[in-house]
Amino acid sequence: MNPSKRITLAIQSKGRLFDDSVSLLKASGLDFRFADGQLRSPVRNYPIDLIRVRNDDIPTLLEKQVVDIGIVGENTLIEKQVCNEGVEVLSKLNFGACELCIAVPEASAYSGPADLDGVRIATSYPNTLADFMRRNSIDYSAVQLSGSIEVAPGAGLADAVCDLVSTGGTLRANGLRAVETIATSEAVLACRRGGLELEQQKSVDRLIDRFNGVKQAQETKYIMLHAPTGAVEDIAAIIPSAETPTVLELSGGSSQVAVHAVCNEPVFWDTMETLRSKGATSILVLPIEKMLE
Image (cartoon, rainbow, N blue to C red):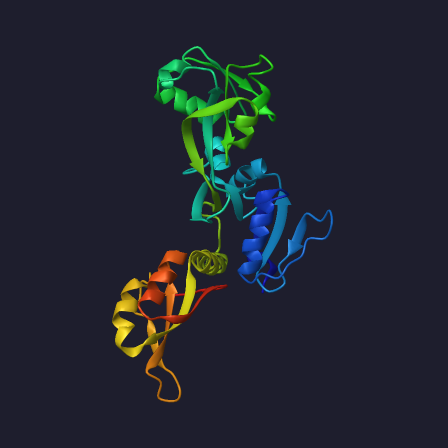
């Protein structure tokens, strides 16, 4: 392939978003390897070159057309205020979920956004916070920090914080509680707007199809069981499948059949027990590695 048609994909250089991005890319069939300290890696079997950068830099690199596409947190795109201008979101990736929240000390009374009037709020997301405060007509003071946001109230630097929350454990450990969610976020595939050639766009579209297949496989299970011939209709109604299950005859003239189905909803123990009560046996629930429709 012409080198000019290769795509540059930026991913976070380290951390959970890096690990999850690498897992998704490898599950999508991309063959690459980052050696220790290596920041760039060509994909051997796909017209993509990977580059590891700071998450906060990805929106700027997209907007300046230094890279073509990037896997980045929505929260970063929102904060950098690049969406609908130089950058567009192509696909949500089903990992890296978190919320940008305003949190106050546990002992603080809070009944609504009006209680934030005149408050000092420590954050590394000043633009997103300012937009929320503007929409709610709240006068406040921003204390911009780049890390250790949760310690600010205890150190007397701020009265509240605005930071990303995944489980809430860090807030609780610092005597804080979330009172307002001002944005939700997950990892997305983003693209520089209008900057791809036709062949590059086709490659990106094919990659998104693979991503969707991986996501769908993660959310589905394959169920196999044996069932009495006369109970197939009742059993099929119990299986959480969007399509009609496949029914196969067993060898030897058995009075049972094999029932196979792709389930796009969780298959819980109580589902399996209900199937068994209807006569199903040898019930297997298996993960699906890849899936295309």
